[in-house]
Length: 154
Image (cartoon, rainbow, N blue to C red):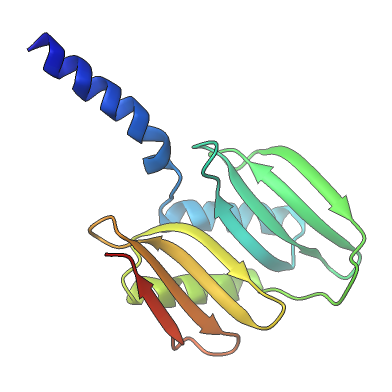
């Protein structure tokens, strides 16, 4: 019995960081608010970090003057920030557009959110897990909430 409890505890501790690398859509909303409050006008990516369970990375543009990378903790407080002058055109999604794409991804079966990424080409990727804990990736084209690809891991 003692051996079974030890194995169960160790397994739980090993798996816990991976389970925490994904967040709820409420967590994503809190991070959007934190980014917007900071001044981000165009979100390029929001990612729950695999390395640290309570770390969220946000990248985006503050108007046309600054590109910013933020590391936020689970409470939405900034742990690290980095700004630089942009080397190209500003692109990304407004907070409202991010919400709309997250809603569209949820309608395709994503239950827990891991990452949203906007590419310069206009491709938008939303990654997460479905209700069974399997990885799910939904790709969109900017301006459309109909997915161009839904990739499920089996």
